[in-house]
Length: 320
Ligand code: FO1
Image (cartoon, rainbow, N blue to C red; front, top):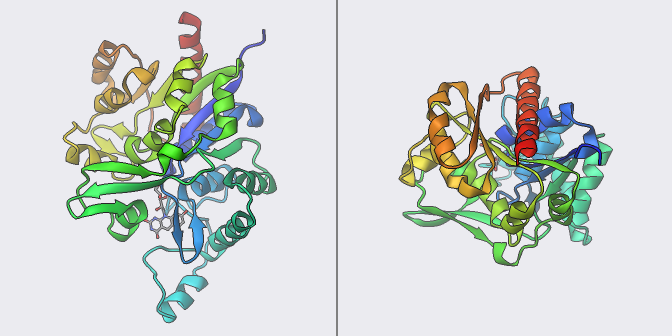
């Protein structure tokens, strides 16, 4: 049989999208299936906003706003200025170009199209060779447990700027949500080369995907190594509230703590060189550690990490 070639990457927003871009440039396009978290999605101003799907889509099409980490580059804000003038809610910024995607998606969803079909139409139109799918076509909404009660994710993340201390998470609707069909099929396929858990927030970007009914089972049965890249480097998250959440959850803010969080699900765990001394403790968990450069500043960094992760998976597959 020819070498297995298919890659499944689980991704949230910025960090995950960077590695997804690296992967898309080192494997043949259609061999990469990026599964995006939809727990961050929410209804706002009558629109269905899908931040992680959109960040991955914009990143793989070269349209992403690299300064903001979300939305489009070269954006204009005429809509927001008019919304402000009219007294609308302006805590969540919607660029004029970004708005086109939300309106198009809203119209298609209202017509009964699935989120997968809308996403496929957009990614094909934008010339993205990789496949990008939502983790589910059924709605799942992440709520953050705080001292003042559950908080919808975007209210926590944007409106309240991640200030409330988190006590845990709720993924509302997840019990009845079916994992996206191509995602589950890819995990069962015998041409699967690797499952890559990208360096996204473990709690609010990756766990919603893992907690979907049937996903952990499908991952356990998958015929390829499952590798996670630490989102924590030197005790800090590259971007976002992961380290703050870990402290509030009583966990050490370390790469090792992330490895423990994913636990037995993994075959391999990738740490940055600054955390190299934790490799032994990761190995003691029964995981294979890989120590390399995981901070992705340039496109070359994204590609280099992607190559390292895939070579790591190939090495693990040969020993298993
Ligand atoms: N994040 C912000 O911090 N402020 C915003 O105004 C904002 C607007 C926004 C609009 C569209 C979109 O797709 C993402 C947006 N984000 C914004 C980022 C978003 O909250 C995060 O990307 C995810 O939910 C976390 O990964």
